[in-house]
Amino acid sequence: MSVDSVLNNWSDYDEKKIKNGLDPDFFSHDESWEIHYLRSKIRNVYPQVDDLKIFEAIEACSLKKNELRKSFVDNVLTKLGLT
Image (tube, rainbow, N blue to C red; front, side, top):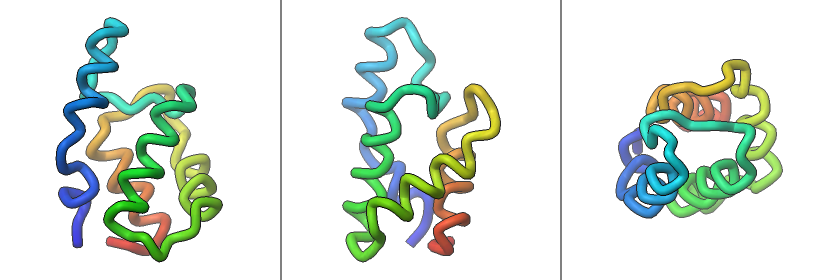
């Protein structure tokens, strides 16, 4: 599977970001709802991956204030050894 599997159907995420005046193409690791959203998306595709491992990978990849969503998700999946 690929990053595209995790990025499939983020319309509810997009709507919330737009509603808050933010660009949905960028992932903000400072927002807990975004971190939990990504965790949920990863678990839907990779149910065998432990939540703590996902949170650790997100934290380890959170070097930039805002990063393009696709790039960030790809980095997290790489950190988890899934790509």
